[in-house]
Length: 89
Image (cartoon, rainbow, N blue to C red):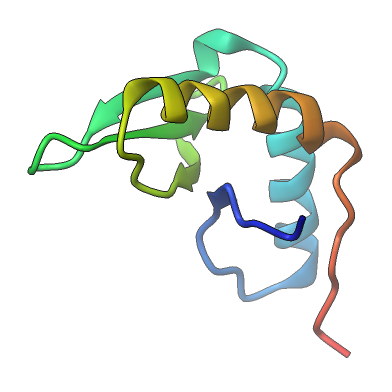
């Protein structure tokens, strides 16, 4: 549906970006890589972390923990085969 579930940092080099995509695809398959957190106002969100603990993706803010958990499930399901929209043109 084109909805953004997970956002990464910005990259200066395409090779670094492609490495970031590969890291998200790999790490999104392990539940332990998802850090479930809250905003300062108590809204649920999550971070996806690499094996070294570096945050490689940040979620939107959710209205409920169940919505956040559905977001995590969607990343786990869709990240391995997600289409890359290369806009470096």
